[in-house]
Image (cartoon, rainbow, N blue to C red; front, side):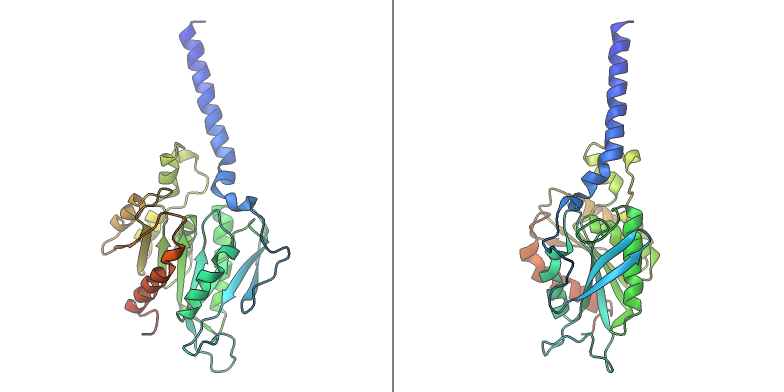
Length: 283
């Protein structure tokens, strides 16, 4: 057999092997949070936080509900008669994070007069199941429906908020439930685009989150925030999202991808200003 044919076959087999490896291992790479242990040996919620268990088809998913805090510094949620329904954030974190990582940030949101529901990913922490686009959508749809049934939640002012991979989750939720607004922080234009940037052909992507479609098809207001030094999901992704729909701007954050915690007061200020400008938060 001519040497060129032998080399050609070896190359074809190597490429096919690479494709197979990427296809079967990509969820382990896309959802590294499954490898983290929860810092809580048992599934308890922090003081002042309501623990929620969402019963999905694949098992139970944990969520934490933070009731909004009024001007006098007391929780408004759970007062019984006279409760005022409040706007509510349903938050999807990044792929390497757990809900425990976001307690302080959700408390800041509650202090700004918003309820917040922090939903764990399937297969992360104490949640059951395995993470995928379909199981994440099921979990967050259940979370939305749980919020709608709460007296302290204004069903017309539920905001889908996603960071990093969580942006894809929030975008999917916005296309499947009547959320009042969509907030995307440090997220990608599409899973296929981010895969290609990491030398994975787009056709191999199993969980095809598409924020370009979400931004384009969602009829409500959209807030985009992105770190100007992001080297994980480059700033160009935010620029691509602004091009998907007229009238969008990017709120620039002075951070990269995973070091934006010091910017959180500015993030909350941008969030509340955005909600007030769209009549989703009282002035």
